[in-house]
Image (cartoon, rainbow, N blue to C red; front, top):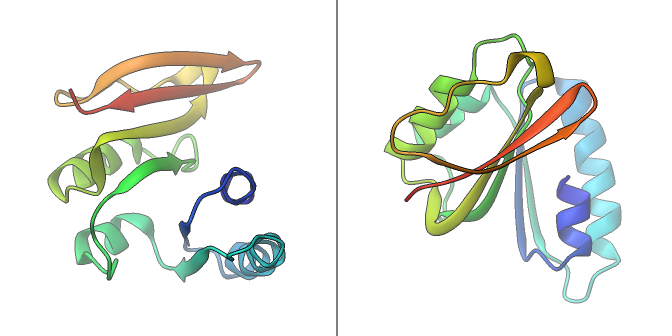
Length: 133
């Protein structure tokens, strides 16, 4: 998803994952795609558990993101804590969107403070498009 965002003109990408192998692959792929753009976007890849990273507030620019795409392990129970951390930490700009990828048969409940704009199903995967009203 981050590679696609770069192709569509994103100027800054932050990718967070705790798996060392996935982080290595993300760094390589994002660097290759970013190098194809002029000017190249700022790309940061962080190896850390996402809730820990969000609670630590380690994003140095911290103005909030226009788009946050989250694809946690479907059955890990991270959707509610993730929505809460994003909301309480003001990680999303007022006009920004949160895209949550989940299993179609286990869509998470939308927390108060978030508004469901769209729900798109792609076979066994669903994308919830949310914003803060």
